[in-house]
Image (cartoon, rainbow, N blue to C red):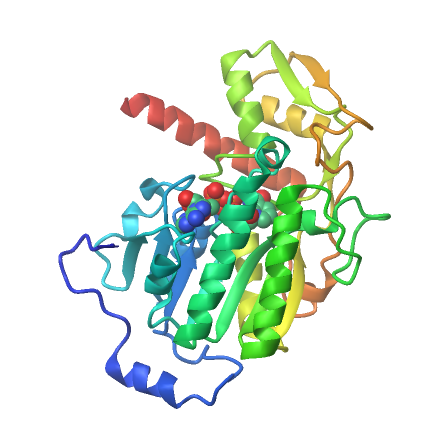
Length: 356
Ligand code: NAD
């Protein structure tokens, strides 16, 4: 269903542009010179997707969002409703017919829809199979049948599992230890095959932990909720020594657009992370400081070798030189990214409470 807030017929780019697309040789490497190409952002009502939408719209692209609002929210994209360059489809990509509806007349697909909760893997692995693998397959089939030739895919550092050493490069072994990571690795494999068989130019982006305003999952959000409930004690899943690198969402969006524009081959994978990393205990300190809490007890809940849950990785950080050679650099380090995110998320929670 096309939800059209401004009561007009949906448009898909001018006739001239459509004709220009049609004239492109099969498998043309990029269409970036057509600024008003219609681009699809699946999962565009979610955290990263909505920030990507903001940037694409502000840069003058025609943007369609396809989202089933399972974890995303219309609040993240409401400010675009009524913009003639924006449209929203409430669709579930697990339905192949809806996936084809979403892809129709599109030049590039940014595929960000997924269930991103690694922990869900432990108890409900079929969620990651269906939301991530089945939905991606449906999207690829729709792209194949409608001859859409450009794809940017939100993958994850979790495809590497527990690497032997960090930071890990793109050609390191893909050995996921969670079903979430396995689902992303499976999607990457499907995308590689579709790229090779059908000439879909694909950019696979393996994000580290992305943080920023609108984030509603992961450790920063979890700590904020717990400390709001009880500022005296914080439950920390794991022994607190787990190491990750964090990237601010604006830096992640910059990286996404640079990779989209500059990736040279038909299938390229890029790590998107930071130059540093941070331990979970320090994240607790940073979040508590932002909340004005100076003294709290830490209740560690370690499993196995100190991880927080089955499938959690003890140490992961990404080598980002491949993308840096294309001209991208993160502007915030991990600690700054967490600090700024905690401030924004806290403000958002307080605003929502005041509205009620
Ligand atoms: P999010 O939950 O905020 O966004 C996911 C969006 O996809 C939501 O809006 C949700 O409603 C939508 N969605 C889910 N299943 C769908 C379906 N079947 N059909 C249509 N829409 C569907 O998560 P996010 O953090 O913004 O993550 C975006 C992408 O980046 C995901 O693919 C995630 O796996 C990947 N990723 C995120 C991080 C991170 O740190 N946030 C790290 C690595 C990879």
